[in-house]
Image 1 (cartoon, rainbow, N blue to C red):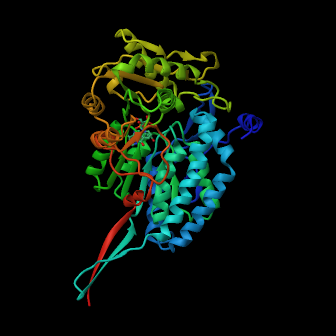
Image 2 (cartoon, rainbow, N blue to C red):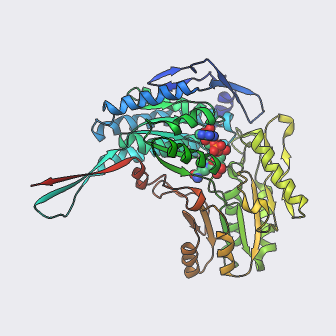
Length: 493
Ligand code: NAD
């Protein structure tokens, strides 16, 4: 990735985008368009189709037809694998173009965007493509007078609704296993991160994906997303986003066809530093990255640091030093470590949390708006050094570069504070005491508990929440559970 390549791509005009339905690029049925605003400078970047209910229905119909006639599910798994691997190659070949396009739309720093978006999507496609012809069914150990066969069958039409923070990575966590399994799909990107998913969908057609198998419809969540959720023809709905939307999706499923709904929601993840952490400097550095990269817009961000009282002051000092070193700036500069906040609305919310903590008399380090002269949405990392459990910033997800630090005295108190949340997505424990590390892993209610690190878990392990952080898992072979049904054949011999 050279800076001059990035500079060339930065200035290229961005084409206007339409939906991809039944293998064709099509505009909204009523011709409406959404302006895409770049968070780098607050200016229009391009436009894409503002989907209607009719557009969502057209995509669902195409996906239903493609599933029912077996043009994809009826292929040998090895044949689907071939298309998916070619698709991965095409994505990888255009990785920098895709990454720069994504950054211009959602503001993530380019270094992270390249790795976490196109390259991660290509790797995810390859992982599930390679796995799908290695998942045999079962013969049950039953009475020999009978034969019990357990088949694995694709669940049918899958709708995916994804957020704006990592559209390709999170999108691929859903479309790669679903398509590998033989399902067909309609995907709805977030309003502020649609372009790369549309371009990747075009590459699927180029790779030989039959029409109707993978459809992308852009537009408002309350229109296109809501229609997918209430459809009688969608069998499974997978979602990453906020808890408020998750609730609506469950209600819509209950009102319609009881489709299965899998939710990956937010978090307020505790990052617990004991005084016996192996290396306090390392803990401070990794903890800073664990909350401030991508401007805190990471579902598993370690947004609540709990620190043993004896090292509270020292740790805050080290954390503040690390935060001060994070280069916030132009996300298309490869030296930048935290780019732009995704939208003006998100920036305003982040700044409100900081102002509220300051007004409540908490010690606030950083948290100012930056680079306002560019028209873009930039913010310095913020540390609320003495947050209390009743503070809104301790309880609610900010989804921005804002971390709270709270002191504790005992292991039991650390567990109680860690679990004092409606969320349960991720956590971390820093300690040299092996027994304590394992005790904490058991006691913390979260889908992912790090020990002496934060973030960076790879595709081989599942990611999913407990409590109000959701249900079901992305990543790993367990992701197939959402897209493959078990069917029993019971045969009298
Ligand atoms: P959001 O819930 O507003 O939007 C997510 C998606 O849902 C978007 O595509 C949006 O258009 C759609 N949507 C909105 N209203 C809808 C409705 N009524 N019906 C159907 N679809 C609708 O969330 P957001 O603000 O875009 O994303 C940030 C949130 O996502 C944060 O809370 C974050 O924690 C969460 N998140 C979770 C994970 C995870 O893996 N658990 C990952 C990334 C983000």
